[in-house]
Image (cartoon, rainbow, N blue to C red; front, side, top):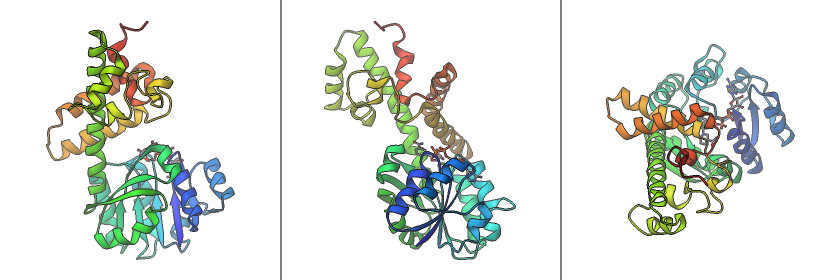
Length: 298
Ligand code: NAD
């Protein structure tokens, strides 16, 4: 299949590589010339512009862009995709954006005869490279079924979450909980250690008791508890504090739009924001435990 791919950054680059590996013909565009060059050397075609992708006789277009403003510009802008696209081309936006913006763009696409899915991902850059991403997909069921084999070249777990925007709803709700649960684990681990228990013993108890969650079991924030977690390598790699901050901002904004209280989500957002302001935005978000541990370092 001939697929257009826009946004070849940390996530989009490896995702487009996996489409090539699966045997698809891929035409690409990114504002960054080195990002395009990397894909061209793997066999992709350089489309040259957003407008050229729209005219490249592709059957499907996938976008993986930083935020809602970029998505709106690429789809709705004067030289954007919708201005030049033939009807029927399936559009898939995998960027993480707020659900209402996703619905707005999907509505404009539908008005031009282009079905659209929001399909944000979890799994990070490692999942993007390994082709094991989770896709949370919003849009019509028939369009989801059309997209399924394409998404399967980039991910393992592909879930239809309901109508347009619901992929983004699933993503913001899950990531808000993740941001909160990490702070909870950081607080509990720090309390236990300050009171004298060994960090590994405490993590073992939590992970076989009712406090267990992904943040305690897979990405425990306490250094030395899990050999392969970012906490044991100076919080490098993993999911950056600033990316978590972005997702908590989307959750707060989406909550405001429907007047739904997100009390712990807002508190978590402020804690990550303070931590980022202190120069830690590039560290894995589990480093938030440093807010609790500054006094008990050896
Ligand atoms: P990135 O900044 O590495 O890549 C974005 C790419 O989009 C860049 O190469 C940029 O040049 C390109 N771009 C921006 N405007 C463009 C335009 N008008 N036309 C063409 N290209 C344009 O970001 P990323 O880490 O790849 O993340 C992409 C999306 O995936 C974000 O919405 C992010 O929240 C989400 N996400 C990221 C991760 C992660 O771990 N990095 C995990 C899950 C979801």
